[in-house]
Amino acid sequence: MLKGKSAIVTGSTSGIGLGVAHTLAAQGVNILFNGFGDANEIETLRKETETKFKVKAAYSNADMSKPDQIRAMIKQAEDTFGQLDILVNNAGIQFTARTEAFPEDKWDSIIAINLSSAFHAIKAALPGMQKRNWGRIINIASAHGLVASAQKIAYVSAKHGIVGMTKVVALENAQQNITCNAICPGWVLTPLVQKQIDDRAKKEGITVEQANKELLSEKEPSQRFTTPEDIGAAIVFLCSEAAINITGIPFPMDGGWTAQ
Ligand code: NAD
Image 1 (cartoon, protein in one colour):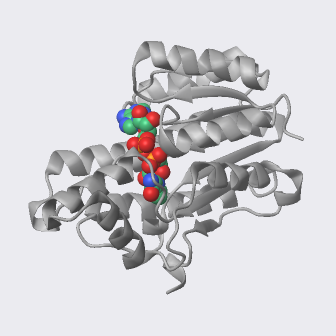
Image 2 (tube, rainbow, N blue to C red):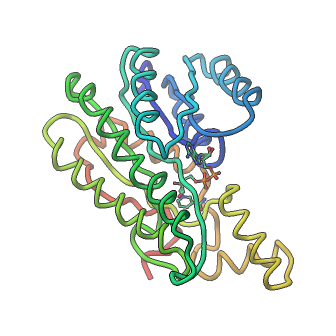
């Protein structure tokens, strides 16, 4: 169904982005990886993806806080694959502190990477999608795009912002076979969340396993983590023709977190 299409997944050297990239590649989608990491490991990841899934795989080291590098990444995908059909805006970072103590530079970088990067990537990708009359844009927001938690002023602001951005892009392209949706995961056990669990264990003097349980029971009624592959499967559905009339939605995958 998606065989031969091409995708960028930003922040795909780790966590959710990596799982999403592999799930799309398994459907025959060419992948442009992006994100930080060891150059040799990334090259191995790129080659293994080509061999395992029989697709083309490329890599851009674009820094998502730099608009000119984001534009160059979109062009690289169009030049390498001939076209860019699917854009998954996933790269993101976290920092926690109360508002009065929140460092300005952390605010600026979270807004740049978690919010503005999606605007720059979407702006650069849309003309090609509009010309071909087909496109799928998926923004990885968060349960924090719908509800808030203390100590996350920049993250919650960015994620609420990206849910709004999703709606505008959906409306502007509603008659062009281009959909734009946001996925709002609850907890996913990736390095970004592992750090919060480790910090909590240290601060409260409890084991990592206890901190893990506390984190889940505090917010997520299902008491289970969503996996990167679950999110990949949802994205495959949103890219399918059956999902052509689904656009502009925040799609929670949060075990009931935001139902409360
Ligand atoms: P992660 O830390 O495992 O991966 C983040 C990826 O983004 C990495 O590949 C990293 O190299 C890349 N990245 C970071 N800064 C970058 C930059 N300036 N330029 C380019 N790439 C950059 O994190 P994750 O948990 O997989 O998070 C991925 C996305 O999912 C984020 O937007 C996050 O907010 C969102 N999310 C995560 C969870 C969760 O529980 N893990 C829940 C909801 C939403």
